[in-house]
Image: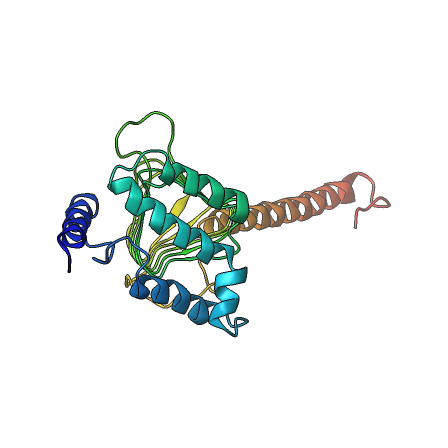
Length: 261
């Protein structure tokens, strides 16, 4: 290993230790090495059953193309190369529809599915094996300086159109459902739904995701309203029956020929 390569590895590991003390990212250098490309390609085979060949992935998967371009841009960025990292990022956005700032930290095995409209900010950190769908924003709120973009843990899932904003932490194995807007931290293993996002936490951080039986936090409120409505309808019916009986009993003394059924 040459001195320059060793120096680059040391710099990258130092930045990793500062930016992700909990070990969100692998310790591989952000250069287009074989292990990095292999992880980025292999995860597509695992997550997309329609893919048949690695050449198809490199040619027709914009998420993979954007990640490979970003890794080169990020390596140049941390080595303080001027202009070229932003140029690579800009060209990648033009060809893939995915905007990743060169300063963003992205782990290995990350899969950007679809990809169009994805925006990842400068200080964002994406942990290993995260899954990001189209039209996702990992952005800032416009009020902070320094670390102002979110951090995604390992094996997180961010659904279609979700917006994760500000310097917040999304725990390992957390899932953000489609269209959710997340403005606060999400514990590991939790699912976020709604606007603003509400956390639904499971028993285990690495629990099996079951979207069919996913609990809706609004369901108790809706159920309570239905129960209250049924109770009021029952009270009205009972009140009407008692009023009819009272009227008929009084009317028997006044005019027996008039009755209410």
